[in-house]
Amino acid sequence: MRRDDRDEPFDDLFREIERMMNEMMNGADTNVDFAASSDVDNGFGMDTHVDIHETDDEVRVVADLPGVEKDNIELECDGKTLTISASSDHRQYDERVSLPQRVNEHTASATYNNGVLEVVFEPAEQSSGISLE
Image (cartoon, rainbow, N blue to C red; front, side, top):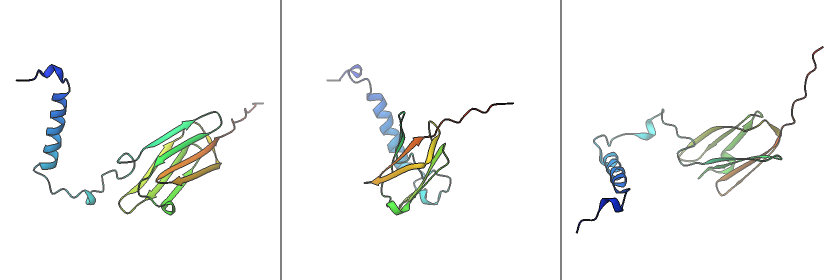
């Protein structure tokens, strides 16, 4: 008994994905040296996720840094962008996160627990108006 393909509308899609994966894994060019490629982005996006949560009282950045030791993390902020630099035995992370609003980088606090980095900022005071005389 042949099953009706309309019962499983995603079968064709799954077969195509499986075919492409098999082709990629068993393709003709299997001697690619990924470690030697300097053009490959080895940072975030490979296996790391960055979330930004914004309230009236704070801006919170949460980033996954799997396999990174706390001593191998460097953070910098200019009030508009948070730069996260970190390294593990297998990967170098370098991410610039645009913040949704200007923050007071001098009030920042950061914690790192079980591969999850959390950085909290207070919003910067609104700039005062300048009167023109």
